[in-house]
Image 1 (cartoon, rainbow, N blue to C red):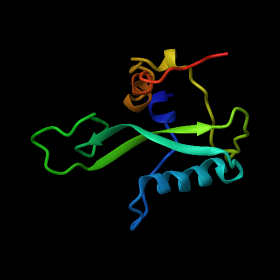
Image 2: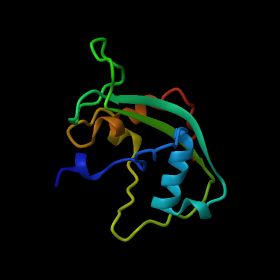
Image 3: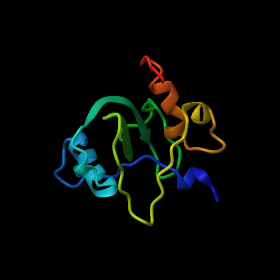
Length: 129
């Protein structure tokens, strides 16, 4: 099993006419994780953006100078949750918690969007305990 294809962030494509990526993310969270029952969550700031310039698996954190139009734009947002909450997912899905240290530069095991999360959140002061 290749974890790069199996483990991914919750999200998806915007519907036609859906211009706000935050509203699209809320729709996906409601659908995938029954987040409509969690009243205390907030979509925070945009952490990072990746661009797919061809129809392959390569992602870039920038648009190369020779590219005039990208095939896909992937935005990663911070989601603020309450201290305790429940997630409800479909039986066919699996919810995994992965520590930040396991994601950092672990490109053999995880995809670039997951491996970039420790770097993207490094500007925040995290308090454990």
